[in-house]
Image 1 (cartoon, rainbow, N blue to C red):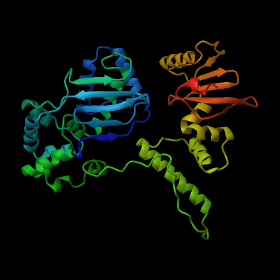
Image 2 (image 1 turned 180 degrees about the horizontal axis):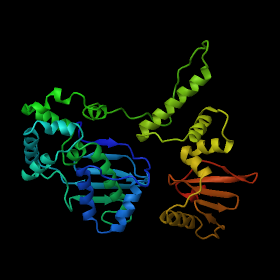
Image 3 (image 1 turned 45 degrees about the vertical axis):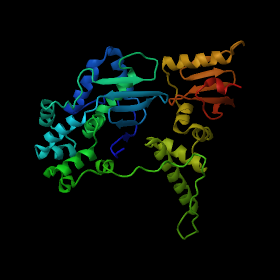
Image 4 (image 1 turned 180 degrees about the vertical axis):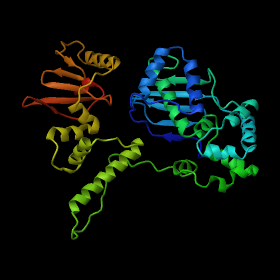
Length: 373
C-alpha cells in the first residue's frame, strides 16, 4: 500500500448559514453530478443543511471511496469508479504534454484544458450523472440520504482546496503522479518545479503517519520544575497539563473544539482547580466537557427522530411497569427530582435538584434509560 492509499481530513466545524459549497468549477461539477443523480430534492436540501452543522465526522479519502461517520453512529460512504492502469497512463500523457499542467495542480488549480484533453483521450476525471454511488447505515432509503448528500457537499470544499483529492478518488494520489512524471523525465515534474509547495500539501506527499495515541487510562507524567526566581511553578505545571490534555484530544479527534472565552475559562478551572466559574459549570465540564457545559447552560430542540428514539428506549425500560410522569420541554426531560438533558453530542446528561436549581449529577449516557435508577 502506498503513502497515497488514503488521506484523512478533520471534521468541518459548524458553518454560518450562508456558507457556500463548491466555489471552483471542478467542485461545482462534482456537486452537479450528485444533485442530478438524486431522486429527492427534499433530501438534498436536508443534506445541504446537515453539512453545515458540524455533526459529520472526519472524512477519509481513498481510491474509489469517500467515507465519514454521521451522528457518531452511521457509516456513510460514497463510491467513485477508479481509473484503470491504461486510462491512468493516458492521463499522464496529457499532464506531461504541457509544462504548466503539473504546476497548476500543485498550485491548487484544475486546468480546463487538461480535463478536456483527458476526456478526449477517454479518461473521465469529473464524475457524471450516476457516477457517485452513496451508501449509509441510516434507516433512510433516499438516494442519497441526507448524510451521504452532506458528505458530497463537504467533499466539494476538499476539492476546492486541493484537486488532488479528485485524482485520489479516481485511483492515484499526488505523490504517485509526481513520481510517475519524474520517471518519464517530464521537465514539469523535476524537484525544482515542486519548490515552494505549501506545507500542508508537502506534508501529505510523504510524511510517515503518527503513532496511535496511548490508551486513555495511561497516566500522563509531567516534568517537575524546581522553584526559580520570578517563575510561578504551579501555574507553569497547570499550563503544561492543559497543553498535554489538548494535544491528546487533537490526536484522538483530529481537531480541537473552538471554545469561547467563557468555555476556556471553565475548562481551565475544571482541569486545574482554579477559581472563577460557578461550581455547577465546573462540574458540568468535568462530566462532559464543552458539550456538558452546553447542556447546563443552553436549551434547544432536538430532532424529532432523536426524541422518538429516546421515548422508545424509556418505554422498553419500563415494560411491564407503570412509567413515571415525564415532563418534556425542548431537550430537558424531567422525572420528579431527576432531569435528563439531551446534548448536541447525542448523549443524555443527568441533573438533580439542589436548593431549587438543577445540578450536573454524573457522566452522560447515550441510552437515557441507563440514567434512571
